[in-house]
Length: 260
Image (tube, rainbow, N blue to C red):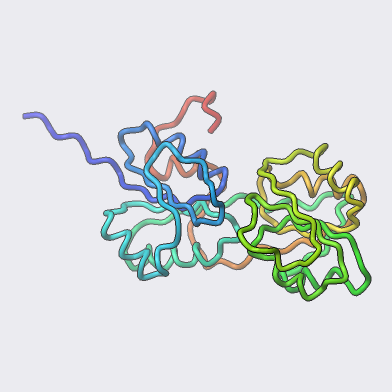
């Protein structure tokens, strides 16, 4: 009598990051896993992944709990952006209710290095206030959802870089908009800051390589950076690499040339 093959492990990946995409690529062709990727919907035209995917929220903790149960999800990997604190908190609560193991794939914060002139603040309201009363030329590399606090400080010139064209006018009259998708490089961001005569940069401590170029460029040019600290997220199991996630899922060790 032959035994029936084991059912693939149902995995929900909460994505929106480079690391999530790397994980998806490694699981896509492995028959031991039945993975689905969920995008938050912040990016309007995400690249279609090689596994089933969905876009948008779940309807809070209750909605996510129902989804986990209805879809027979066995594991959840939270590979969302470090500033997606609400989604991460919902995942922690829903997984606890549904008794589904959860692991966060959380990239390290950016290291502060010699030559950095960081003004560290706790939120975007404080970041706007840290610009001061005198007019300045400000580069905002923080995403469209965090622009509103800067509208109360219209004395500054704002250069805003977004991934997608905004559907509505920016809350910053007179701001200059650049639509571009990373990763960005040091040479390009240095030219950007110089050509627009930027004298201060506002950034969120996203970590990773894709948006770090503006921090390096500011360091080289001697510009101050208002750095928004990461929001607090309740305690959870977390790792820093895709390889550690694979081991948690029970994936075999991959050849070194696969880059894990």
